[in-house]
Structure formats: structure tokens, C-alpha cells
Image (tube, rainbow, N blue to C red; front, side, top):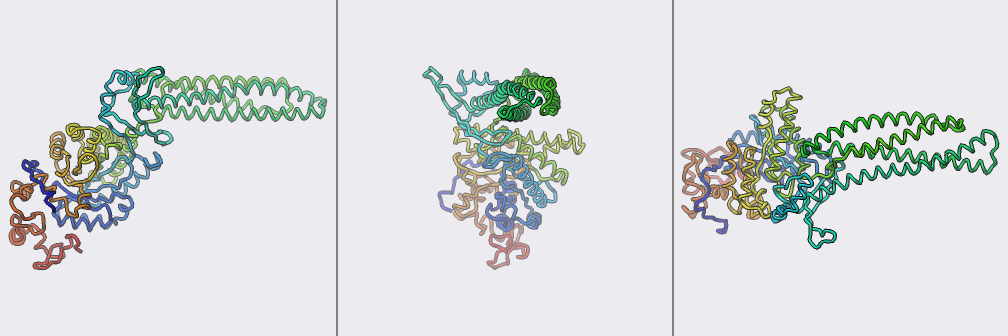
Amino acid sequence: MTDSFIHEYKDGMKPKYRAGVLGAPLTTQSANQIQDMGTRLNEGIKNIEISAISPEIADGIPKEHFEEMRRLGKLTDSKVSVHAPIVDASGFTQQGWSEQKRVEAEKQFESVLNNAKLLDDSGNVPIVFHGANMFGADWDKTLEETYKTKEVKKEFERMGKKIPERPARVITVVDQIHGQVMPLEFKEKYNLGEETKDAWTVERQLHSLNRNHWDQEKLKVFSQMKEIMQIEPMKNQVYNDLQKYEKLARANALHEKEQIEMGKLAHSYNTMQSHIKTINEHVNSSVQDMYNTYIQCIDEKKLSEHDKLRLKEDKAALEIISSNLKEIDKNREKVESKFRPNMPKEESDKLSAEWNKFMADRSALVSQAISTMNIAPELFKPVNEFAIDKASNTFSNLAFKAFKKHGEKAPIIAIENSYPNMPISNAKDLKATIEESRKKLVNKLVKEENLDRKEAEKIASKAIGATWDVGHINLLRKAGYSEKEILDEAKRIAPFVKHVHLTDNFGYNDTHLPPGMGNVPIQKTLEMLEKHGDMEGVRQIIEAGNFVQNFKESPYPYALEALGSPIYSIGGAPYWAETRKAQAQDYYSVGFGEILPEYHFKQFYGGGWAAVPRELGGEKAGSPEKGRFAAGGE
């Protein structure tokens, strides 16, 4: 290792982060995870994380390898966790969102969960899941001053919305019914007749988008109904003219030209009647779609008490209108079935009058229904919010299936905060996802397993939690956020943390450096998690794959140095951060050095692999051959 990477940790991190809680991921490039596990174990690493994050690679790991890794874990007193394949738990793809894709992801995760159970007989293996991989938002701290202006505050009051904790310059929204996605970007627009610009926040644009779309849907239905009203008088006139010719026809008094004209009128009448029927079908379909959107896309939790009461009254009124429409359509079809060629005029006129009345009543009811749906639904919703709801469906279903199959020994679902521009990437959204997942799991356990609610809540609290990736959250620096704000994120999520990913960067790219080589406040973050959460037994996986790829050596010793870890498991001096000062020799090599002499292991405590028979993973005395747990071993 070159001197450029050798640090003098004068104060260092507090010497309490022992190697026993630290761990390392296996290769992401191969399904042969068991071979890489041997290499990591030979380095003295106690916690291993299977990291086949590609779905294809993950599916290539044989079940027997999971069982063998369990045996290796027992033999070496090490533990294994799993990083699930990076599949969108919410159901997003490059084409948008679909429930089918969410269900497919859930099924794939279920397979991962069952394999993870094979790793530990005692159960509760942590599995790291990503909530969503779709672009969600570009945060921009520089917009905070804009959001504090009187004009923007007034606009949010008009919309009935709260000013967000963190402003976004760009967000992605999703059509909740059809799944299409589209971006919205902060803009400044000139007002008509003014020289000053008005701030169009992404929230204002979204509010306008939903309102305009709803108004357009209403206009579409009114336009269709207007077309019917325009055709009806013409159809009635044609009908009256046709009746005159039919009267002559019954008296055998039609000339050849009149017969031709009668045929044209009959064709015209049937065409208009068919067209009215088609438009009515479109109206029915449009109103049904509007009602479906109205019911499905209004989030009652966001409504004021007044609007909640209004929505309840509207739903009751719409049920009555729907019932009346069905009755009218039923009677209208009966009248239509009675029409026949050459029927008496009196009877025909009576049926026409009935039919016209039904159509008038129907138009009035449709207009009433549309007018009743006054609250514009959120057809378009921020991807960040939408993903929380859909991912919580996936995770609650997984946890429920795991509990039914494995009981108290079920693997732990540890949802990871992703990159800041993706959904479920900050403490607020991750906390909301966990709480919603637990809530849905509790309801399932109470309803389907007849468990007491308190018992169900205890199970849910254990089954679903967070993986906090300190490197991912540090990327908020790119959006202008400070170290204090990054630590506040750790404080908020601390009570939910069940797993940790330790990695370093400089706040702009997820460079996966070993702890201590970037500006991630790792020590302060760990202290925050310990102070506000329960870190007992929580594994801390060091993710530094890029470092390994670039510099061809293990990041683990440098992490031990940066974290101030004691060399011996009993704690106390010497510490890894001090070894470079004490000796010029590299104590991270397998030669042990004077502080870790080889005879210490061979003759006294027997703590290493040197004296273990080769069949059990050790080395033959005086032989250069490696054991099967060593890198490149059999």
C-alpha cells in the first residue's frame, strides 16, 4: 500500500468498534459466493454478506451453497447476512409502474428469503432490500429561500398543502391508474402584464396538473353529452318524416322515388340511433373511469376535516345516482326492444316519448354525478410517495409469508436507504415505509392468524426494520446539505436500524472507499445510532468494492484503523490505529509481525489457521500450501 493511503489518526475514532461487529460483502460479480466467503474468513472477518445483487447471478447460487455457508459459519463462529438482488420492490421499471412487476418482485424476494433461512438455524438472518430504483427527486437546498417567500407560502395555503422539509428542483410523478411517469421541474414564469417572475414549484405544478386533468375529464363527458343533445332533434325530425312515408307504405301509395327516400331516411335514423348508443357507451365508460379515479386517487389522510365530510357525502350521493342510472338504462333498453318497422304511429310516438324522457333523465343524472365529484383526485402522485405505499405492500406480504413458514426464526427484512435522488432514500421516507409495512403486517396477523394486536406489533417490530447506508445519505452534500443535517437523518432513523452499511465518499459519488478515506461522518453517525437506537448485535458491513477493484487489496485493515478497533477481541490497547506508528512493518499482512507473532498462534492460544489441519482449512507446518479457507484455497 502506498504511503498516500496511510493515515495518522491522532484522536481516531473511539476504540470500541471491535472487529466482531464489522463485516464485509462478498463479490457482486459471481454466483460462487462460497469461494469468496473462504477468502473473507481467512482475513479474519466475522460477518459476511452475500452480495449477488444481480438477479441473474443471485439465481445462480445453488441451494447447497447456502447450506455449506451455514456450516462454515458454525465452524468459524461467523455470521452471514444477505443483500437481496436489486429489484424494484415498488413495481417500477424503465417503462413505468405496474402491479404485475411489483408482484414479480415479491415472488423473487420470497425465494431469496427462503434461501436466507438456510444460512442460520437460529434464524433472524438480516436481508437487505432496496425499496425502489426509480428516479424520484433532485433535491436543492438553494431553493429553501424561495420556499420561504410570502408568495410561495400563500400559494401553498391556497393548495391546502404544507411546505416540504426539503425542496426539490425536479420530481417524477406517476399516473396511479395507468402507471406512466413524467418529470416536473421548478420554473419561474412571467405573469401576464407583469415584469416580475412567479415561482412555479414542483408542488404547484403537480396541483395544477391534477386539477387540469380532472377538469378535462369533466369537459370530455359534457362534450359527449352535448353531441347527443345536438343529434336528438335531428333524429326526431328524421323519425317524423319517416313516419309519413311509412303511413303511405301501409296504404300502398308510395312511388318509386318515395320508396328510395324512405330507405334513406330509415338508414339515417338507424345511423343516428346507433351513434347515440355509441356515445352513451363512451359516456358510461368515462363516468365509470372518473368514479374509479375519484375513489382510488383521493388520499383522505391529506384532506381537511371539512373535505373528509364532503367526500363522505359525495360518495353516498354517487351511490344513489349510480343506482338510478342502472334503473334508467334497464327501462330504456326495454323501450328500445319494442320498436319495430311499420308499427302504428300512436304506439311509435308513445315509445319515442318514453325513450326521450329516459335520455333526458339520464343526462341530468350524469351531469349531477360529474358535479358531485368536486374534489380533484391525485391521479398524478410523486413517485417518492407512491413507492412507499407499494413497497410496503411487498415487504408486509414478505414478512407475513416468512412468519407463517418460519415463525419467530424468520429472516429480518432490513430496507436500505438508496441514493438521495431515488425513493425511500432519506430517514423520513424510510421510516414511513417501515411503519406502513409494519402496520399492514399487523393487520394481516390479526385478521388471518388471529393474533393479539400487541403480540402482532411485537412481531412486526422485529421482522421489519432499516439498513442504514452511511455512504448513500452522505450524497446529500451534493445538494448543498451539511454534516449536521446528515447526522439528523441518522438520529431520525436510529430506532428502526437493524443493519448498517459502512462506506466512505466525498458526497458526490458513491465511490465505496474504506471508512476514514472520505468525508462521511462515520463515527458521529454510529454514535448517533447508538444514542437514539439499539445497536446491540447490529452488524456493520464495510462496503468498499471500488477500492478493492482500483487498488487490488483488502479495505478491511484500513477500516479497522479508521474505526479505532482494538487488535485483540478482549478490547483495550493496542489498537489498529496505533500499529503504523509502532512499527514500520505492515501488520495487516498474514505474516503477523512482532505484535502478532506466529508462535503466539501455534504454541499458545491456537487462535489462527496456521496450526489447524489442512483438511479443516488450516496450513501444513513448513508448507507453502494454503488452506481451503484461504484466498485461492481449495
